[in-house]
Image (cartoon, rainbow, N blue to C red; front, side, top):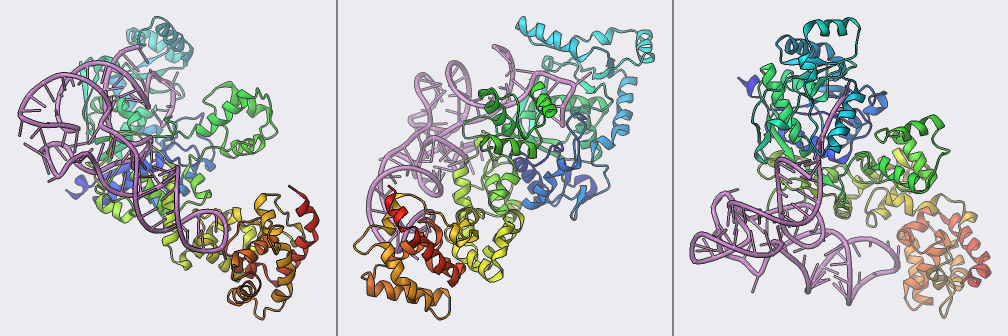
Length: 554
RNA sequence: GACCCCAUCGUCUAGUCAGGUCCAGGACAUCAGGUUUUCAUCCUGAAAACAGGGGUUCGAAUCCCCUUGGGGUCGCCA
């Protein structure tokens, strides 16, 4: 009894690299629903497309799921996740199973072999387009007699297997969100269920696997709505039970276009096309040609990134990994993703994964498509960062540094800790400190002073110029006993009290510019403390040495 | 184009299923003030929506219909 009523959901990505946010949201809801009901969440890899499934690197989404805390009970084994008794969880390893069912359908006359080539079919489709009619497979192969089929088979003619769809008026999909959706029976033709290469199509593999893996609830994007009708037909032909379906609305880009993992590729293509580029340093000629030969051919992510860097364009953040790299927190991503298509009701919008598991239900899912608003995500991330205690922020920032900015680790334990402390309040992402504080890593005499109005204001302008204050403060700083934030503060405050009418800004800004090259940095005392006495004094000298140049620029 | 889905501030949404307490609430973004050693925060305030039209009803953001708009699908991709 418990075995048959156990809730089982699955997330079934194709192994095409990193997880994109739309997929992450689907996975999150599948996971949350299973957890909510004490069921199991299955991860299955849909790698039946030989053209697109290639190396192990394309399993990067496992890491993404794990990072988000979406842990799968069954599926590929990865860092404590996966395993299970319904495997293999790679469809490419289940071909025998599919063939068994395929043979059965053929024997029963519920499916049949078809020998048309892809080109022939494409021609037929083109013709239908011209005639402004809907293309539907004409069932020509159904009329082949057994002898002909035998002959073709003995000739090893490539062929597909098509489902002989029953002639029904309509197919009614019971959707947990949308209610009953009716698809006309004539809208589904005898679609292909096994490709010429011997692999099942997505439709067939999904149905067989969902049955054999005991999937009870299928949550997926609304783009699958019509596919569900096909899947129901296969289930009926095979005598399988019907899982419950829920088709959720899609997540769109802010410009209204569908948020797709192909967006990066699209951005590159558009740029290359606009500029009429015919070659690139980052992409070898062969790959370049392959990429141009068909618009579905996508560059590998690392190649795409190299090309983007070469062309100087920013690729849209689409993958979970992009957001990780950009310094967003996994718990914020989970929160934000959950809000895209589900709402707990009332004014509640900040919550964690436990809350989601406690409260997730189908009733409160949103039917209409939503746009992915980065500003709001950023605001959520800021709030989460600010709510963190200092120790936690330090730990997270260090993790981020280890992964993306190891050069900052060279500051050493103590200085990195201070670096974290003084950056927390001013950070919206874990990435912020590393992009805004590069001056910490630069040689003292390599500091380059920005030629901006604010820099000149800090250094040149005023009754007593910033340069003058710097001169005067040098001996003061040189004599600060213990080079600590508190003593530095004391010394500089006192100097400001005596020489700038207590106006700290008058002396803090010149200092800031002298040691960082610009007008933006963490708190000045922390900044000085991290740099160290020697560096600070030497940067002040460096700054003063450029007095003429800085004053002369306009 | 055909078929399907959807429709509250610019955006995410609460309210819709069980019509009145909603001249519509929250959040992000925006704008205006304020705090602050810079940036970022933070505080206060403002502007901002029931797509349009018809019904049903004493009463409609809520129910029905049409129009319009947005999205999806139309592969030997998944």
